[in-house]
Image (cartoon, rainbow, N blue to C red; front, side, top):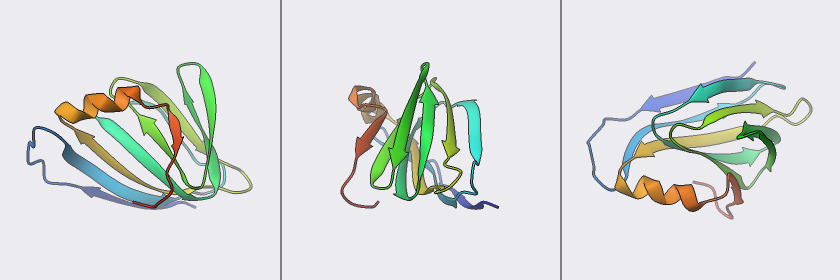
Length: 114
């Protein structure tokens, strides 16, 4: 059984980076979300465990200490590992600077938690 906390943030309509949603989930083995499309940028930081991000016809393995990035309009599904399910935190945002995230790979290392 997954444990999930979602916080919908007050939309302050900030022009550069405007936080919209944040949360944390400790996933059950094999827990999956998607396919889904979002209208905002969404970053997940994996605290522990592992899983797979599926997008654009590719499967991207993700492990603890990595971030996976979901871009507006992108169809994604992500699934927790059956033996070592992930625990992650996420934040979703929009704004002018969120377009810069299109330059990032779908999965990248992040040395510190956020």
